[in-house]
Length: 241
Image (tube, rainbow, N blue to C red; front, side):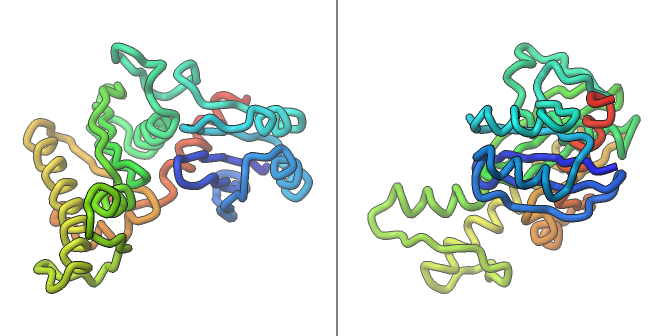
């Protein structure tokens, strides 16, 4: 059985093609035009589909996918393997719901901190009673680089170099050290604070740059760049039955 899992984020529109419960391929979509949806249907003939979106995307995309699949759009009303006893559950981002579902699916009965590296860094805490309690949100790597260029008169826009020095020797390497090392220290600091407060504790790092940051962290973590897609698949199985 083929399932399409869509992740519409602030930076990219992506689709994971599942065969059974295994990811066959991950696609980056050019747009949310219905013609893209129709091309995916024609090529992969999926039985099921699920979409997580944190943007105001074209609703015709959903309609097209739903015309030929069992389709579910992720929201606070989605049937999940956890509960959200927070003040305004309807404000929880779809991406955070998918990450929480994956945490409970793969690490049940544990206090899980799922750290998503995207346009923003999201810290998502799901306790061992399978309750999503919230967490934190801070600027992501690209946002930090762009902010320093945008809000100063002379600092340039630089990109990541994973061989950055701790002590920068020019403007470029100073910026790289400040952003990448700064994010590393921030992530380690959050993990240490949670570890001090909770036992039976597990950390998952996910997002496109997860493997790179994992190498710099002092804490032991589980890194999986496709964790959100796996959460979407698990939710699809529950909501598209």
